[in-house]
Image (cartoon, rainbow, N blue to C red; front, top):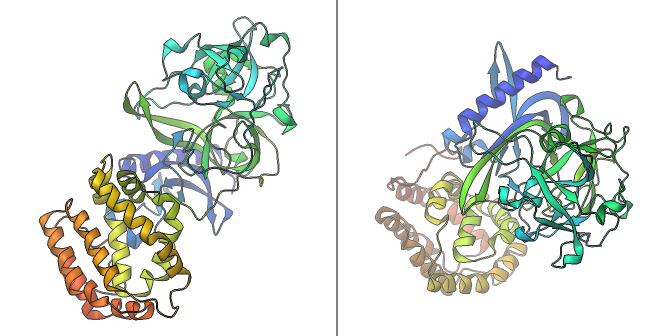
Length: 521
């Protein structure tokens, strides 16, 4: 079904209603207009798409976190499609390295897709295009504010821009001329992340609209520029593009081929886009959503502020930190996406605990998922414990986010991690191998770990965890994998855990749905 102008307005209104109701909820990262995706395939049903950090079954969510299936606008209901993406940041998270080389060559003349930097930012981005300043026709570099400008500050005007990323004065090619400052708060959303830097006389002697390494063609009427890539979620599975017409207007510039621009709308959802970026080179994906609105947390002038962005384009597996500023055009096959492991997803609670103890737990998310699905999900008690973890993510975050463990706590956690990481991987790979049983050493180590965690628990939480550990966990000594599952599937074991948890006022035990395998006690 085509999205008419009136339907687009209605979907945007539904998007706003959803944002008002859920933007304050942790894990809700924005919304836009799209077509529903079902089983990996795009349907023809127009929807409001809601972006969440982790898409989970309804039974693993607090009632107040459950998104509606529909939003009503006027006398019509529109579906809500929940999509896993975000939270978004400018430049994304560079920790997980993509395949492919960085474009580090020195290009003279300057070429689109080349690596550029402002030394004051200690990072690099991508030259999006060579443009002309509308005030005097002078040639300039077009890229993002967060690439060319240091800390969103007007004092950056005149700063040197270098190509490639270097400390050499011989690589200075431009000076920051103008940028659109970021605004903060939901009432003043940003439409672009853009800046220009005027070329030095030496760099301006020869101009080119070509792309570094001929990774794609220049902007043309047939393959017009649609925007600048500027932000992504932590695993760079999903990125966003600000529109080129608004970006050029905000900084007063024109492309070398001014007519080679296009403004994507709902009719363009599903069309292929391509870019050449300094970090990942060439990629091509498809427009997933338009009218995307989302918050970004920025470190500005020594503090954290929230900048909202609106009217931008959503796209999957398209870029990485260092690709920020890439000029994006219509074209490509839509399938040359980044080779990202789709089995790796962020978990806010896991990330927070990992940061607190300086542990690389984010690399073990696939292992945790295997334990959840292959072991915990096979018993009443295991399912209940999984639900407890998800329902109480906010409790975990409140105790760990921004907290640094003591040196002795970090040392103890690192020791346990090193001792058991390979053991757990091996146990998951072959859980029924002969001789693999719970030992007294395992139980004693678990007791040490629990004692460390209890220093951050309430009195009621400590009582409950001691009760569960002493009456149940200690009884598992000598059990095999299958015996553990059978033990955790027993009614008396489930009831003991349920009763202990129910006595703790700080723990949420039920989500939107009661556990299907048991009723309330």
